[in-house]
Length: 302
Ligand code: HPA
Image (tube, rainbow, N blue to C red; front, side, top):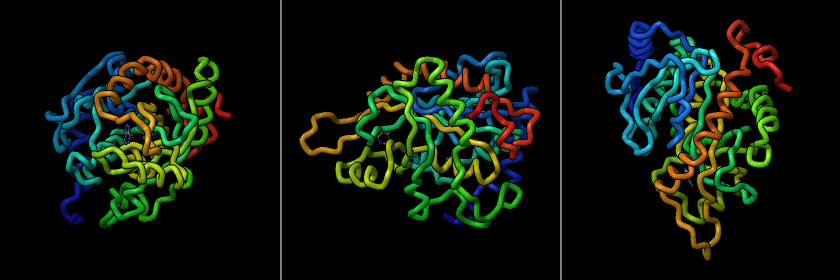
């Protein structure tokens, strides 16, 4: 990648200004909907929707299950914007393009980013249909030198060397787990470590064993790069994986994963995810608080 090819601050601003000029809504929460998990976006009130193809500079979704619309609206009375369809490295997009919407969100005034994804379970106690609150991630691509922040740093977004030891907001995680207990979801809402790989192939058995040994509980082809960029520009982050399959770690196992199966499980659990995140958004209290002040940013956080 040549740094000069990257979207500049000005291009991000051009996109944000275009959106701000086409809607009166001023969202404070952005939600990235993972594979087959767009139902949440359909249930926003007072929707205004933009096709990615109509938004200046926006990449286009090429994956089945990722529709390609940005939807503004309210969830529990709170102004949100949902990405129905995200971008992936395996589509051929460089990571700075995959994560471009996150910087646009920052310039729209977003304070909190909620990311969802479909993931395969590496941890044996996880079941298909479980949810995993992401406590932390392993950015395998980042460790190997594929990072969306490569190239000259744009100080207007953030510092050269962002910390990631607090990438996933602990207060929001605690609030989510508390909500899961209240909704009776505790038996299928877990907390764990997500590993991002490049895809598009699913893992070989040796790779699955390696990732599990490294400490990953679930694996997928998104999210960590978006989170790196979000933390670089100071957004607070909450991540939720839907476990759509168990990743095979044994040579005599019969199951073989495919994308259709991933979408089927997502669609089956989409309404549960919707209820869970709707409750969470309803209890996030951020608008009048300093975004850096994690003590006051959630109600009921423990
Ligand atoms: N591996 C990688 N990505 C995935 C998987 C998986 O098993 N399931 C859903 N996304």
